[in-house]
Image (cartoon, rainbow, N blue to C red; front, side):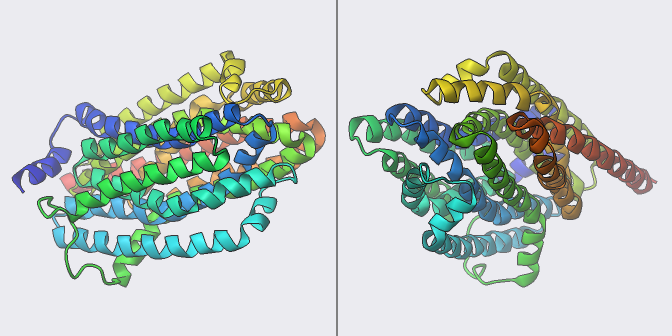
Length: 456
């Protein structure tokens, strides 16, 4: 108990750079490990199955996977933020209630969306850009991976809660175990057993089962200060509303991503065919690594911001924010440089067909032009979420993918063809970052005035 209390107290007393590094490093490893699940599947499938349509088939599954992730993050991200804030307020009982309610919601929502996907899967995939050539691959992969989606929600969502309650290292190790299993099982099932695309899905399911077991075992352990307690597994509607309110921002980010992916896939199918859809796999998988590192930084930032905001330590709040911004922009700048200088090498990691590789090279050179500023935009969005300011976080979540990206996808391609689809990415990145910088500046001024007033 004392050790757990010390973990929480350090959020308000330890050196901010060291604290951010301590919490972000495990989070970065954990989020990158999350990316590895999909990246390994894409790379192994692209080289194990001698059909260029398989890469495009995997691309069509992204929006569906994003929707599953969105529903998990709706609960998990909201729970992690609320736990951080109430622990900063020394309200331990409320943190237990948040934990119990969140598990119930995750399981119920998971069962509902898995059932819906299974019934309407082909119609959903066609809506998201599947063609007659790619539908069989997309259908087979998703039908086999569906059982793992609920496990994925439990794993990634409650890793966030584990981290928020003072266990960043343990959250990292559980993800490492799952990623290690997936990296071993996916090649074995595809190359060794010859199971095809379903082998990659089964490898993911098994890996998710293992990580979900480790994550949930942590919260069943009564030696941990925050754990499952009898009597907390009953719906408490004020708690549910507070969790959903904050979790709505990452939920809408992923829903927006799924919606935009559907529009992008249909635009690509019209202007570039299945090869263009395959090219977007390379872009998505490449930038995912850097985006997930930034998300890891934000996850490390979140408990520090939430705790210090809840306890009124505003100077530490500002310092944490700017360290996170600098780190995130450095990461996305590196991604932007690699995408511009090494597009062909990146493409060859995921595909074999020369025409697909050429299309992917063109995609990377255009889409990564403004990627270097995305780090700032992601941190700004997560800043508002960490403060419990869900409305502003939701608005920023929608700017890039809905407010700017969708109109550009209808305006540019008729004039510039396939290059117009690619150009929509950097333009929306730039405009969304300008909006985020404006909102963040206004909010920081308000917090500074509040800090001055509190000091007086």
